[in-house]
Length: 171
Image (cartoon, rainbow, N blue to C red; front, top):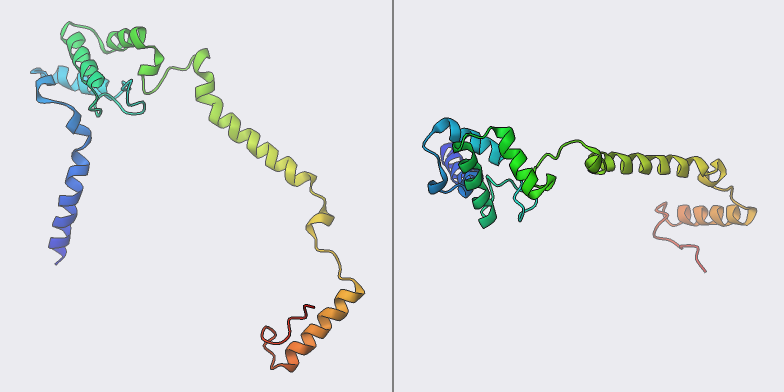
């Protein structure tokens, strides 16, 4: 029974595990295994300009296929990995990289989330600091409220001690 469950799990997981490799078509694969591995590594660093947060290695968009072919073409022409990336950045801008470089035009991208989080924490700190202790502690009951409470408690005890089934004390 355990083997059957394992086989079913394996059969269900197999298509999910094969999804990232599905974008690469057989006509794109280079004969030289070293160049092909370099192309695959580069393709995982390059963003599909249509799909936004997906690499061209896993994208099925037509532009992603063209970029994969362009990367392989540049590598077979003798370009280094850095030259291929520089060519694509010159053509498409820093947007084409999944990990954009740290420079003045991308500081907000790199540090923006941390700044927003820090400002939020400071705001929460000052909000709670401004709260007076009197506002956080309950006010004392007035004499009328104490009398009403004692009547409710007495009525609750007289009705069998349940408290919730007797009179509610509301007028």
